[in-house]
Length: 108
Image 1 (tube, one colour):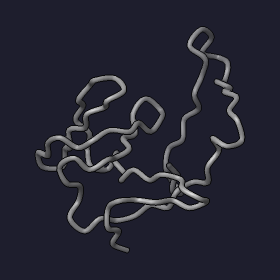
Image 2 (tube, helix red, strand yellow; image 1 turned 90 degrees about the horizontal axis):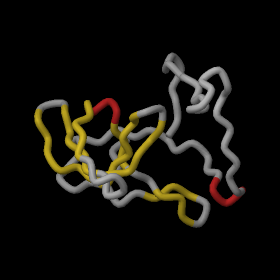
Image 3 (cartoon, rainbow, N blue to C red; image 1 turned 120 degrees about the vertical axis):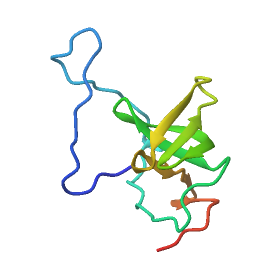
């Protein structure tokens, strides 16, 4: 996920020594360009696959409940369901054949 001008950007640090920046080595096929940000006319729907910004990273989950500006997102990876403000969510995009693809209709 990308950042807009003015967004606060924090650096990730090593758990053992928080004075050292976290460095992670990944293979070239795991590197993606920053996806564009989109507006969605009606917000998120039940079971939409979303990315939630938490703990300095974006995590994939599915919307399970909405209460006002809060969306509860279930992560299959961790088994947790966490409430996020809508501003911390983005529709999940997959990188397929050199382009970002979404199953949700995008409104510009």
